[in-house]
Picture 1 (tube, rainbow, N blue to C red):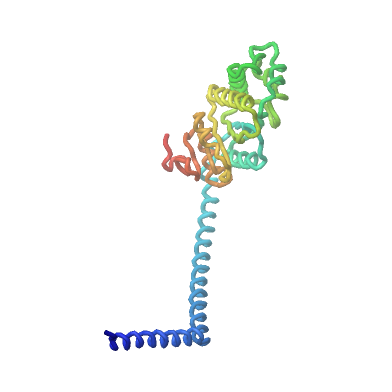
Picture 2 (cartoon, rainbow, N blue to C red):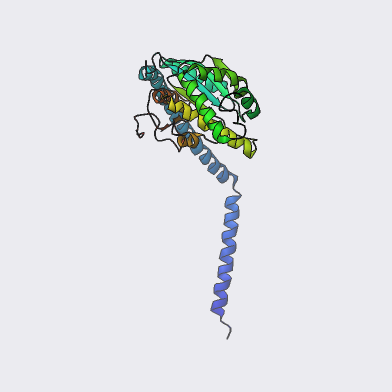
Length: 292
């Protein structure tokens, strides 16, 4: 049976929906209403932007104050920490004028002096080294990584200690093939800063030879009883900190920051650890949570 009440309710629902649509259309088409809503949104955004700028200004002021405090405190914190000490800088692979300048500044601030800067050629010139080492126990270094590592250990020991004359003579003999840059003089060192460039474009044999020479050099420095510190900039990628840590030397991963320069001074003075701002760092500075 046809239900008139059902039909009436259905028709009423349709008419109500139609009326609602008309009203919404009129409301949406009301330019005054849209303009009012837009003005309200703009006003709120302007207010929020103004507050954000004010907060940014306050934070910048605090940051400037903290930076001024740090700059004033830094010289006091490292004063005479390396008084009279001679420091060497070794680049494994490519050298960096920026790192050279930062290391010199940091060491000088602590009363020390960078007396020797060298860049070790990588990949090593094995034939040249073998030729210049003729008549010594290291003549076969081009064909034996064990001999090459022992050669590196002697060079590292004599570079750090300024030891027996034969060692200095050997360094002098092989310098042209061993180093791509040399500045200063060979003298006894009381600290060595190391910066390693990530090897690239080498064959497997070249990489193996470079690794043997690098390991030997650092072992020789350690054998001379001289503290070594690996450094890099905060933007260095890939980081060499794991490599430094694997060789048992302290490291600083933010040399381009004031805290990194202070950490370098303390590490050269004998503090051990991985310092800086990266995930591999134990602490920003020695004494701030680092492990002994």
